[in-house]
Image 1 (tube, rainbow, N blue to C red):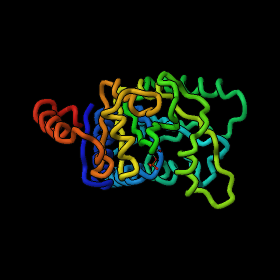
Image 2 (cartoon, helix red, strand yellow):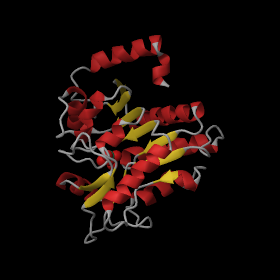
Image 3 (cartoon, rainbow, N blue to C red):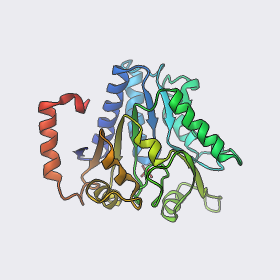
Image 4 (cartoon, rainbow, N blue to C red):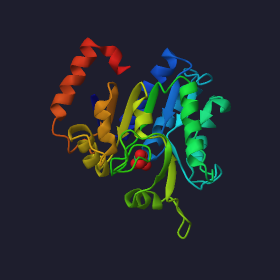
Length: 264
Ligand code: PGA
């Protein structure tokens, strides 16, 4: 595990975009796992910028998004389909046929739908690089606390904390989603490489438990300790409860010196 300590969200989003760009340049047909949420907005902004400058071609990239709210159509302004279109897909040249986002409008037969989403990932050759945010409660995707660490794509009931965090995005009186379709923790762990981004003091406890705490279903992101190629990129506030910051800095220095490929 690598822990990159950055000053603020601008540095984090720039670094994350560079890592994604590097991966796409190395493998133009990259299978890229994508996330939504406030932390991701500037990552997409930088990727769009690189594309507009002509240095990044997404035409062969295949994308899989982590999750979508159940009950929200792609046209709903709070749906993750809408988020992805607004911030990324309408601004770059990803082939629409290569875009996969769980469908929030399915009704019944959830297991069959989720199995077909997993099958699509398999057919694409598996996810090469997965980008993750993290919830205040340590969730990745919508794998809420106590999710099975072996879980696959499925219907998941949102925790109260997640519903509270997301409530601010919905108009007063508007019905808010209580469930989502999300990749499972087992699905996420199969990605060949994982980057998790976290900014702000509200994420500090979740970040510390995920990196330095025991692996526990109470903190879904802690399972990333089992993954051989995961990089946490966190700002000063999100890193504030980590006890081994000095060690992470030294690891980074030595990695840059001895195995710089690990950082690109
Ligand atoms: P955020 O969401 O980037 O909006 O904080 C992260 C998450 O809940 O995974």
